[in-house]
Amino acid sequence: MTQLGTHLEQQQDLAGLIPNLRALANRAAVEILDVYSRDVDVTLKSDDSPLTEADLRAHRVICAGLESINPRWPVLSEESKPVEYAKRKLWDTYWLVDPLDGTREFVSRNGEFTINIALIIRSRPVLGLVQIPVQDLTYVGHVGVGAWRAKGEEPLEPIHVAKEVAPSPRVLGSRSHRGDSLNAFLERVKNFQLIGAGSSLKFCQLAEGLADVYPRLGPTSEWDTAAGQALLEAAGGYVVTLDGQPLRYNTKAELLNPHFLAGIGDPNRWLDVLHTP
Image 1 (cartoon, rainbow, N blue to C red):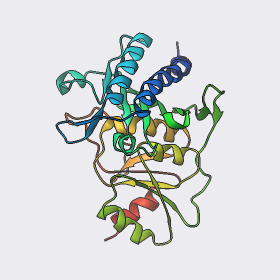
Image 2: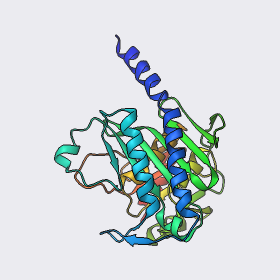
Image 3: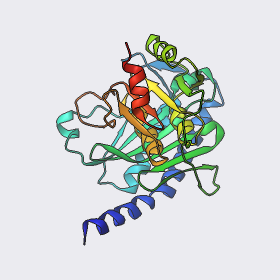
Image 4: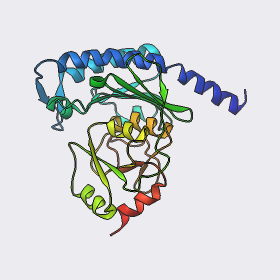
């Protein structure tokens, strides 16, 4: 088989995973919303990030479901036991999961939390699903093929980033993690609209044309961004590090991302703003 034929076959195989991923995310959302409907007990992990019963219930559902889809592909979830890099670096293809992205938003009950499921192949996210349980809304991105959204069990509808940056750029900022670096960026942009959003909702807003740029100048982990990156890239956008390179995964022992820029149009426009003294 030619290289092109192999590529097309792989694309078809990945497209066939999407219905299963949607069904799996729906099952995880049921677990999350059951906990969300009552008082929530919160514990702190070793890094002081919050953990709830909803995180753990969604984690168990998603991991079991992904293992049944393809038992050869490892699953790395935020709530998994740590995997040594000596073993993990040998993974060519694996699932990267945040079963409840935005636990702070979950605890504060603002609804801005998501389920993130990404398939990583050779350090790049190629398939990503982001679901917003409270809205019963699912986004899916298949890099090189397309991006879609759907309400509930309705058919997927195509989405795409905005055709051009708005005259007053729409800048996304975190609900929970705004700091001096973002403020400095905004001062340089000057004429802007600031949109606050939690979790990977920011990638969804970029992917469907509701925002222009998301400068992330604070800490994130790889499971926070992989599904959103696949979605955004599939919709015509990009996620790059501050040296202009695509954000990559599983390339080092730690699972923290470098600072990055997600957006539309020419990334150099925003990188120049960031690097201006």
